[in-house]
Amino acid sequence: MAPARLCDDSPVESGTAGMLGALVAAGLAVVWLGAALARARRAHRRALEERGWLLERERESAAGSAVEAERAVSRALESPMTGRRAV
Image (cartoon, rainbow, N blue to C red; front, side, top):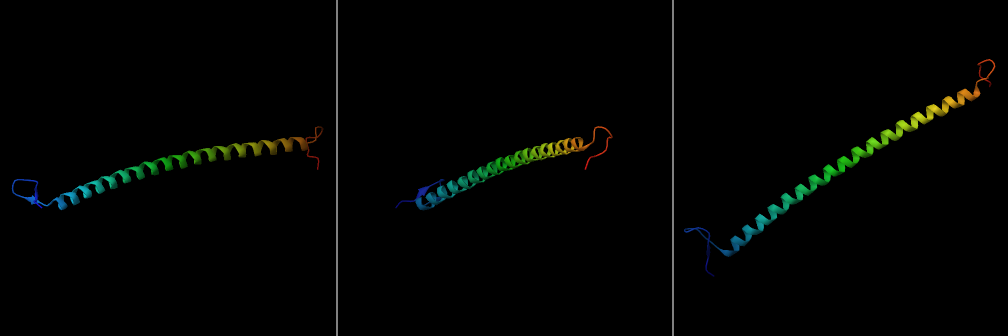
C-alpha cells in the first residue's frame, strides 16, 4: 500500500491518519459530553434552588397559619366579662 502524504516530505500511512481522525473525534465527543454534563448540573442546581425557595415559602406560610390558629384558640378561651381565661 502506498503511504499517504500530509506534507511534501513526511509520509503518513493511512492507518495512522485514520487513528488521528478517530482521536480527534473522541476528543470532540469528550468535550461535547463535558459541556452537556455541565448544562445538566446547572439545570439541576437551579431546580434545587427553586425547590428550596418554594419549601421555605411553604414553611413560612404554615408557621403563620399556626400562629393565627393559636391566637384564635386563645381568644376563644378568654372570658368576655373578666378578660381571664376560662379553664
